[in-house]
Image (cartoon, rainbow, N blue to C red; front, side):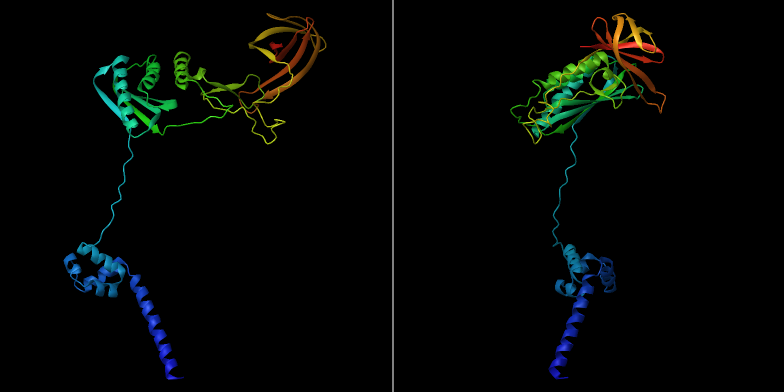
Amino acid sequence: MERSDWLNIEAENVQRSTSNAQRLIAEKSVQEILTILHKWGIHTLGKLAALDKEQLGARLGPKAVRMWERASGQFNRVLKLVRPPESFAETFEFENEIETAQPLLFILRRFLEQLAIRLGAIYLVTKELALQITFTDKKIYERVFKIPQPTNDADLLFRMLHTHLENFKSEHAIIAVSLEAHPTKPVREQFGLFETTLRNSHQLSETLARLIAVLGADRVGTPVLEETHRPDAFRLEPFTWAVESAVPSGKNRQSGSDSHALRTAHATLALRRFRPAVSASVFLDKDRAAHVRSADIRGNVIAQRGPYLISGNWWDEKSWARAEWDLEMENGELVRAHQSEGTWKVDGIYD
């Protein structure tokens, strides 16, 4: 082997060992650096700052350099400001117990005005109001008011609270009240040519609130059919206004097969139901209805279809079963009747 080749191999070995040493230095942890500094007799920040920066970095790596910069006051760390979430809530504790609504409404009016100013200053509006009332027995009444169209109008918001509280009753006096506003950004909508919206959503909300105050929350809402074959089975859900377009959304706009708004209705009979169903006496002839007698309907049966057997909820205590007939009376009326648990009732008349 020639001398030049031997020198090249030796240079590569030195370079490889140097890179390995630099990598080991870079991988030194802070605890290892502190251990080495203690062996050198460096126990204070002043002694660490007195060392030469370049020589310290060459021996202990970049982490030691950052430690030296912090000790000598040459390290700048940017302070990141974190703003705490702002709460839009107002609370008031009464000096004396109150038993009437007037002092409570006075405080709530002041709360709404203050919250409207705070929200308006940062270009936000109120989408929900959370009311809490504390009584002398330490019980807390809570109610959340959803705003149909977010706003900061104190008069509208106050009317909503006033409508609810004018029929509110409690057995104990009030000692504290709290009102919190949940903010949101103002909503701007642009409707299409065939779309529509409420003329005054706040007036609708106020009307619904008055109906709930008079009738109860379980008697006001939108009826939704239950997933059952039982006639007239439905539940009430809170009323919500949804804007729907009258333009067909399907791909085939000429046929309109996917459209609900412009779909052509088929000519079908409508059943005018009696609610509740009218009790009736039905005379049978060979297990077929021959004569019907009730408060509204009376006469012989000239034609009939049925029985149509339906049942449901057989797996629990709310099980039901009934047999339905469509009856044509001698005067031309078409009647829907059913038999359940040995009794007959007339459901309605077909128009």
